[in-house]
Length: 306
Image 1 (tube, rainbow, N blue to C red):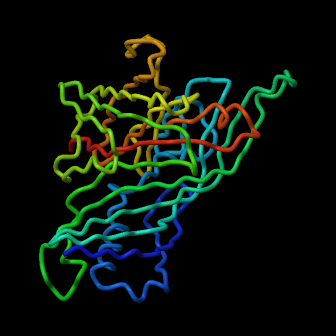
Image 2 (image 1 turned 45 degrees about the vertical axis):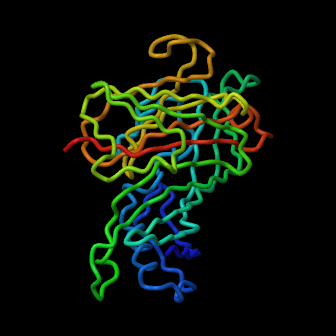
């Protein structure tokens, strides 16, 4: 038997995306014990579930590395851009199938999108700052398994599987066909629907420190072509980095202007759970201060071996 409950859960998180501090919604008194247990487990497993890596804390160079110590390592570039906002869990929908609880979690990530561009009218100024309002929805699925029937519902459930994530602005016209992850040892993962890319926790892509990983993105030919596509990697609550994808037939990219973008990153030395993203912005988002923010990102978790 399959049953569904939709929960309205609202709680505030730190602007840097730290999802640990959550306020309980007093309107949630009617949800049953299992629903409440799943909600608590979702909150406690944000390292697997959160998409904090899409928050740049403001305008940054196209390529940068944030090391968790307040330092940005970046190349000099005439253009900077980035998001700054607040994450909030908006909906938690739980379907029960036998001893499994399939949770669909929807977050909002709203705030501002910043662009720093060269001011062609001022030879002295280092740049001009533009800011536009930003809204994003983020969806991920998480599967829990019932392992016991104790009086404490929270102890009865364990997280077993997690999907990729989809982040998008309202009404976005950007679309991907697939992304492909290739480890240096020949292992590959192809994702054509992030919410269907559901892996057991012990089957999440496992990468070695220092390993070079290649990420390829195929654009949907009927959708708008993004102006900027960045690879985000090494992202968790304390670290984030990004670099531009290539479609110029140079470096790791095979064919110029074929709609297949390629990037790679070197796995860091820090162990644990991280997330990588293919993150696309249209030309209006970055190059026109009168055009609304328009973006799409697909993400997936990976683990650096301990």
